[in-house]
Structures are given as C-alpha cells and as structure tokens.
Length: 358
Ligand code: HEM
Image: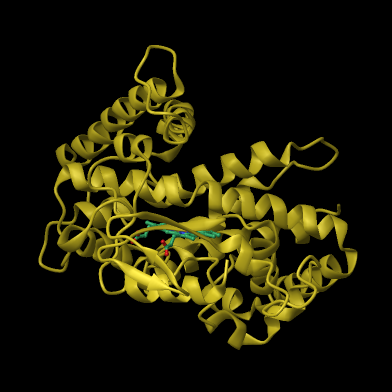
C-alpha cells in the first residue's frame, strides 16, 4: 500500500475515526476494552491505561517486577531443548500477570493461564456459538477469568493490608490521587486488555528476535557486547534499571528491526466516519479499513534492502519518528504499551544473551 494512504488514514483517524473490530474480539475481550470503545469512553479507559504504564510507573514499579520475573524465568535453560515459542508465550503472560497482581501471581497463574490461552484462541475464531467451538470455549474462558479477577478484587478489598503497589493496586486505589477511577467491570476489562495486547506482540517479537540473532552472528555479537557492558557495571544480583534500559540503543534497534521484518502486527484497523477520497479512490463513510502496514515495512524506498535483517538502520534515531513508522500504529490509537513492551523484550534479551550461548 502507498505509504501516503496510511498517512492519510491515520491523519484522519486523529479527527475521530474508530476501529472496526471483528465480532469475536468484541464479544470476548469485553465491552469496555479500550481498543474497541469510542469517544469519551475511549479517552477515559486509555487515560487510565496511560497513567498505569507511564514512564514513571515503568521506572519505579514495573521494571523491578519485570527484572525480578525475567531473572527467575530464564534460569536452568542450559543443556535442555527449549521450545522457544511456548516459552516466550508463557513469559509474556506471566510477566504481565506479575505486574498486574504481584502478590497473587504465583497462586492464580496455574488456573489463569489455560483460561487465558483459550480466551486468545476464541478472539481469533469465527463467532459461532456452538458447544465445542473455539468461540464458545473463549467465551467460557472469559467468564472464568471474570470470576478469578472478581475474586482477587474482593479478597484485596476484604483484607486489611495496605494497598498493593502493582497495576491492580493502582486501579483499585480510591483516594484523591487516582484521577482515573474505574468501576470493577472496567478494571477487569482493563486487565484483560493489558494481558491480551501485550501477549502475542511481546512473545512473538521475543521469539523472532532470538531466531534472527541465531541467523545473524554479527548482530548477536554486537547485542551481547551491549549487555555484557551493562553487566560489567553491576553485581550479579543487581537488577536492570531505567538507565540501563535507556542505554540499550542497539537492543532497541534489534527490536524495531525484528518487528519490521517479521511484521509482528501486520496492520491496523480503522473505520471511516466520513466519506473520503484518496488518489482518485472513494472510501465510503462507515467502511472498515485494514491499513496493511506490512507493505510499508517492506518498502525499499523507506528501508533499503528491505528483506535484510539490519538493525543498524535504526541507529539513526529519526527513523523512529517518521510518519511511516507504523510498527506501533499511529494517531490517537497508537499503541500505549510501546515502551512497556520494549522494556519487557529488552530485559528478556538481557538475561538471554548474558546467560546463554546459542
Ligand atoms: C512489541 C510489542 C507491541 C507491539 C508491536 C504493539 C503494536 C500495537 C499496534 C500496531 C497497535 C494498533 C495501534 C493503532 O491502531 O494505531 C496496538 C494497540 C494497542 N496496544 Fe500494543 N503493541 C505492543 C505491546 C503492547 C503492550 C505490552 C501493551 C500493554 C499495555 C499494549 C497495549 C495496546 C493497547 C491497549 C492498544 C489499543 C490502543 C487504542 O485503541 O487506543 N501493546 N499495539
């Protein structure tokens, strides 16, 4: 697709275009899932999410949890055959769960994880509500997840303990400092949104990054150098901190190049709120549009030698701020989890390359 078209659509999106989600996603992710809601509800839910995963929150609350999780998760992998696809899926889910409910994550994970995997399958299925279909299993899984999260909220409210310093704790915080108060139903949908949005994206990017590193020893060597330099400044038990994360320039480049070449998310959804004309084509009002970003990612004018895995192209920081940089979408719907996702994948890669050899 002509990058102009992407730019045009995303520009107009800022004026109020909304996505057209498939039915099964709407049903299973919930009515107040922020990717699906519009207007003031979108603003409210997105505002609450942005506050929850702001750079300050990542630095002070989330990164220590991510580090703690990754350093434990990436132990005892030596001399074993690792199914990286399975491992990275587990990693993405459990890392989010730890950030959401750190105190309870170990006790609820066993029951939660299989339900979550069923929910994901359901959102990608045809909306046929017959016993045994993925849609029906996904819907049932949503009910079970509502029960698990509802119970968690109730137990926290009933206990006399101080408020928890995790995502759920912040969402449930009822005092003046919380400018984004949500109902319990909204809190639960917000949690499902966080788990869902950060699942396939983070797991597939991490898995594909390892595959590309394996296939490109020079890139692996450069990446390892960056992470060894960070480790050299620290004691083994020292966690990855915000400044370390900011110093991972090559890692960020590897993540972008992986996302571009593997095109982890191959497009974004929009819906026209008014008729629009583009390059002589008329797009009627109310049409659902799939902006196919894979085409942009492989455009040789934007990315010379587009099929080559070349993270160095991203070392020029300005590439990230171009209007055709659509790896995380664009406009008012741009991915709010961009920096959180990058923090998770970077920390995963840190422990991976400093502890293991491929
Ligand atoms: C490498 C990781 C990730 C990639 C590549 C990615 C990519 C994307 C893309 C392409 C969109 C669509 C944007 C648009 O329509 O313009 C999106 C939306 C979204 N992402 Fe991410 N994402 C990642 C990680 C995360 C994480 C960790 C979260 C967790 C909070 C998250 C939460 C969301 C949400 C809530 C939306 C919907 C935003 C809205 O409609 O207002 N993402 N993401």
